[in-house]
Structures are given as C-alpha cells and as structure tokens.
Image (cartoon, rainbow, N blue to C red; front, top):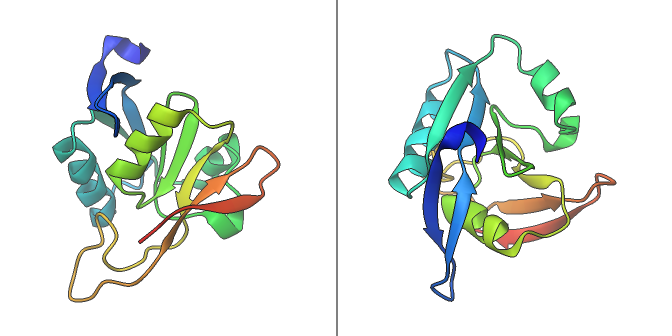
Amino acid sequence: MAGGVAALLYNVSGKQAVASEVVVYQSPTCGCCNEWVSHLRSNGFTVSTRDRPNMQPIKQEFGVQPGLQSCHTAVVDGYFIEGHVPANDIKRLLSEKPAISGLTVPGMPMGSPGMEGHRKDSYAVLAVDPDNSTSVYAQD
C-alpha cells in the first residue's frame, strides 16, 4: 500500500476491496479542489493533497491530454482521476480494474462533486484508454 494507508471500499456485490491512498495534486488557491477532496473523504477514501502552483507538469507526467483536463489531478492504484469525478465512479474503477489510464470529467461542470451550486449540468465521466481515446464510463 502506498504510504501504508488504505480505505475499505465495497463494490456493488458487497465484496470488500482495498484501495491505496488517493493523492490529489491541486492549486493551493482552488476552493473547488478542496470541496472535491471533502467529497472523497466523506465517501470513505483516504486522501492526501499536494499543492502545486503549476499543474501542467503534473498533467503531462500522468498523460492527461489538454482537452480532457480540469483543475486538479489525482492518482490512485495506477490510475489518474482528472477533475470532479464522483466517488462512486472511482469505487467502481477500483473494483473492476479496467485496462485504462484513468477517468476524467473535463472542465468544471456545475453540480459535479465539489462544484455544487444553484444548478446541476449534465456531464459524462470519460474513461481514457492508453492510446488517449475516450469512452463514456458514466453519465450524470
């Protein structure tokens, strides 16, 4: 386990799965990033944050292409999680372990975790394949 920290998660069938710590890279001045981290923690994840004044090197390191980017980048169990991906979709990812690079919610859609407000926009959680092609993983 990364850092020896683990969170217990339960998949849809009720089987127990163990996930490594979620590491979130974020701008030190971004409030919605902190709200998303709170969303993960309230859904059973152990999260550590790493403030970065320039996020582009992190996005490049994990292969997050410009059209798929958002404000923060997280990593867990070898996957990147870009933007305001709901905790349940991350739990599903860690349970199913598909052969993808990660999940993304491009941009910052209103109503996504950490972006709650006066309206809720429809958005898709995209799975990103190693060749950077995408498919819809979940629709909200």
